[in-house]
Image (cartoon, rainbow, N blue to C red; front, side):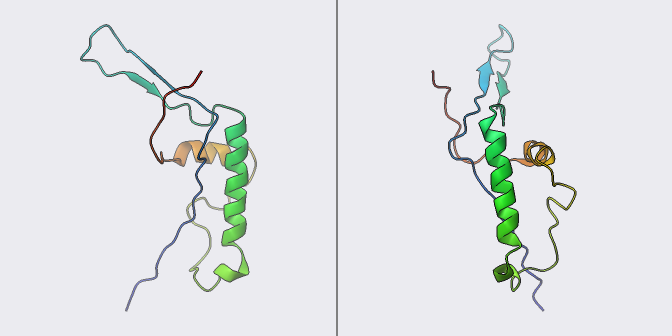
Length: 105
């Protein structure tokens, strides 16, 4: 017997407004740099994350997905609902997609 296939939907902010930074950690060249990815630090990016999150939920709850779903939402869960909860969840669970680019003036 085959086990059920578990699926996931995800979204990507392709051109984020948030910018991180790379700074030196000491005068010793052997010490690694300090990386700050700056996830969701610009006000536009959390708004985009909330919109994408809600759109994914809407798509997953559409009747057309009933034939392929086994059970309810598990990854994010019903506790993540408000416009404050969603960016917090995204910050804690986001993964990098693509190649970071240098800051632009």
